[in-house]
Every structure is written in C-alpha cells, then in structure tokens.
Length: 568
Image (cartoon, rainbow, N blue to C red; front, top):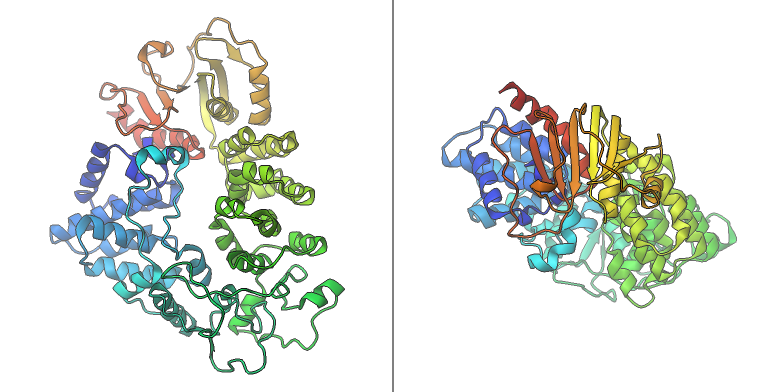
C-alpha cells in the first residue's frame, strides 16, 4: 500500500493483482481497524482515490454479510473535498451497480450538505477528474488515459441522494446545480452572488456594474435574454462581460466603476451590504474572481499596470484559492491572447500551480513585474511552509525553466520546503544512482533531514553535505564534485536508502544483516512492472516512483510495519 504513495490519485495505474488484493482485503477488513486506516489514508496521504475505493469496498463487504453500523461513518470520513461525492458514486456504480444502499446514500447526502457551496460548484462541477497523479502523469498516453469513471456532476449527485440543505441559500444552490446539469438554467438566485458574478450578471455586491433600468427587481435575475453561450450541456449560461465591468478595486471587490478605479476615488452612491446578506460576504472576495470570470468568458482586456499593482497587494481569500487551483492554465495559454488575459491572475495562483506551470508561463513571456511578484512568492518562507510543497516540486520547476532569473528564488524556496520533509533519527546512508536530478535532489533533501547522514554515489564516493543548504545548491555542487572514488564502508548505519532507476540485486550495496534497506525505483511506469521479491520478514522495502509524499514513507513504515517485523 505505502509503495504506491507516489501514484497519488492514480489508483487505476496500480498493477491489477495489487488492486484486486487491496479491494479484497478491505471487503473482509476488521471494523475495529478499517475506519481508522481509511481516514488516515484519505487525510494523511496523497492517495485520495484509493481511499474512496477502499471505503466503498469495505462498505460493500459489510452489506453483503448483512452487517450494520459503521458504514455510514466510514463513507463520511473519506469525503473531504467537494468532488469526492461524485467520485465515490461513480466508482460505486461502476464496481457494485447503480443501486445505492442507505448507508452510502445518507453518508453522501451528509457530505453534500457539508461540502457544496458556490466556489465548489464553480471549481469542480465540470465533469473533470481533478486528479493529482505525480510521476504517472507523463505516462497517461501509454495508460490510454485515466482509466476511472468520470465523477458525477453536482446535480446528478443531488438527484440521487436528496441532501437536506442547511439553509435557503444552499437550497438555491442545489436547485441551480440541478438546472445547470441539464442545461435548463433560466434564473440565478440573488443568494448566489458568486455564481451570478461568474455568469456576468450585473448586480449590487457581485462586483459588476449596476443592472440597467428595467432589469429584474425580484428575488432572482432572469438570464434567459442574455447573450449566452454554453460550453457544454451542464454549464450555466454566460455572457460577454463589458471590458469596464468587474474591474479590480483597491485590494478588495468594492463594486467600483472603471472610471472611479482609475481616478482613485471610491464609488459614490454605493449601498453597503447589510450584515448577513449574501452580498456582504461576496464583497469581501478579492479581485482575482472578477478577472477569473472575465477570463472564463474570453472577454475583456487585462487591467492597466496600476490596477495590476493593486491586485498584487490584495489578499486572496479561500473562494479565489479554490477556483484558481482548478484553472486550466495550459489550455488558456494555448489560446490566442491567452497570456494577456491570464497575466493579472498569475501572481494569485496557488504556489503548487505556479511551480507546475512556471516553464509555460516563462516561455509565454510574462511581464517583468509579474515575474518579480511570482519570484517573491516562490522564495518567501511563510508562503512555502503554508503551501506544504516539497523539494521535488522545486526541482521539477528548476529543471523546466530556461531562464536563470528563477534560480535564486527556486533555490530559496527549496531550502524552505525542507520543513515539509519529516526528520529521521539515527544514522542513515543514502545511496544515489546518478543521471537523474530528481533522484539526486531526493537523496540530498532526505539526508538534510536526517539526524546523521552520509550521501554516496552508487559505486562511488561520499558527497560532503553542508548544513541548511538548499537541495538545489547542493545539486550544483554534486555535478561539480568528483565522486569516482572507492565506496565507503556501510557499517554503523541504522538504515540504508537506495535511490535508483531500476533495482538490480547485483548493484545493491553491501549491508550488514538486520539493517533495513529502502529501495526507491524511479523508472517510468509500466503496466507489466515486476517488483523484486524479498524473503518474508526481510528488512528490504521496495517503493516505486518519487514524489514529495515519498519523504514520509520511511517514518510511516518504521511506525506501522518495521516495529511489527522486528517484534515477530
């Protein structure tokens, strides 16, 4: 199980025998153990889809045996993100048929009430998988795409489980999700100001100019007469927003007109939203949502430089963070004029997205001011620690960009990201096979977080570590250091970590009996992969693929498995 952590959501890419064994074990799992395991798998590891499939298998097994209790709580414990209910129901229908048992139906209904809101609807209700697949992503053509059923849309989930809305606004959201799923949106309630803003409907508190005379004054705004276009059968109607509408205010959405923003004066005659009014909460949403709505509508132009500077000084709330995380940056950059429309949003992208798309953004020619804002975020210690991004994300960005202007920020960010790597007690020997910067950075970052560590080249000499050094600076030193010396002795270590492209027993370093060996194999994925067979009870452990989650595997293994092996 832990060997697949680098696969993240790519449960479909596990070897067939391993998937079947995982499902079979959970179908027969002890109810005193399985709930805690599945909750840990969903919350503490990146294997989100594996946790959803495991919870479904556990509940299906209990229902087949006529056992009651626990099932509803287990399903609820793994539904943590707004697209999880759609994924779970799609997998259940695929694996166990369309009929929904009561525990599943009620648990999903509870999760829908807890998770569905406006940002979730706009970010995840598009039929996409929204998967994180780590090192598997590059191999999707060989895997023939994502071999997992598409998640059910929000409206379909609501139709199947009949959730109870927690208030009137969420009830309006449920009805709107049902309507947009079937392409029947005619009105958008005023209780959904973010959705109205996204659809380009003018109105108080949603950041767009006031509605023209004769507009709807009732509880809902009629959008049937708007110049609308649907991207698909389930998308809500959209309209081309005037270029002056919805421009960025002074760090916050204030409903200011374009002329007033440019003149630096507050909007006159604006009616303040009342406390408790949905518009009041929406007025606190920062400017990126305006730009995001206009970008989605493929209209408007980027704001002038002074507005961009105000946007950079604005804080980005959770609403914008949710939507920006799901922004298809690569697709937008591929469109004519995509960079011009996207550039105002670039400084507000989540740090992980910035690193993932840094090569594309740099090659597209983003402006100097935007690049400076991005570099400041990449190298900011508080930003890096809050994001939880690990050293391998920075190493991938380092390898992708052509310009040297990013090196100082990336090196600083990689150093700050070491805080996301767990500490290892005792003495560790890290053996690295060269010819891959990913393997080298992984080994160097792991060694930096060890109480005492030696780093050696596979079949070569020892690499000197510098305390508190960035793994990317150490990577530069690695390539300029002559390591073609005799391999040092491996005695006196509490563990040995071998990071290699493909494990070959004849290349394994000489290890004293009883010392654990952790093998990481970084070669490309294959459906017909064969793992080495170690003797039962052997202190050898095999992992495939490298990702930032891989740093946590040794502490997990030694806590949950290693002590048990020693005791037996």
